[in-house]
Length: 185
Image (cartoon, rainbow, N blue to C red; front, top):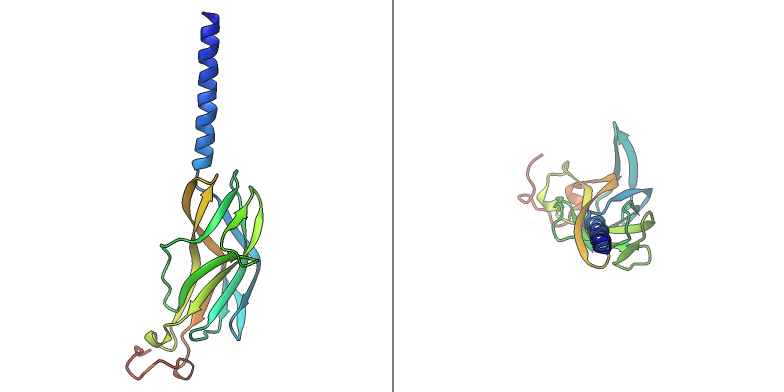
C-alpha cells in the first residue's frame, strides 16, 4: 500500500514537471531590441528625439535598399531561432520589408537564453510616385517568425530601437512620378 502511494506520488510529480516544461517551452518568446544602430543604402541620415520617441530620418532613394542594423536579445528562458520575417507585416507606403538576417548574412538567427545578436533588416524603397512630395512613411516594428525547442513556432512583434522615417522626395528625385500620379500636397 505504501509502495503504491509512493509510485502514484512519483508519477504525479513527473507529470507536473513535464507539464511545467511544456508550458515554459510553449510560452511566447520575449525578444528585445537595442542599439547600437547603423544604416547603409542612403545618402543621408540623422537621429533626433521627440518626447520619448527616437526617430531615424533617412533620405529616400527610389528603388534602393536600406539596410538597418540593430541588436536583438532573447529575454526568454529557452533558446530560440529567429527564422526571418513573418508573412503578416505592417505595410508602410515607401518601404517594403524584404528580409532580416544575422551579421554573417544567414537568415536563421540562433539565440541562447539571454544572448544578444546583431541583425540587419533590409527595406526596399519604392512608391514615391503615389505620395505627395511632402508626405512620409514610418517603420516602427516588424513581425518575426521564431522557433523554440525545434518545435514551437510563434510570430513575435519586434519594436525597432528607432522609428525609421523617410519622406517622399520632390519630383526630380522620383523618376516615375507624373503630373497625375501624385496627389496634391
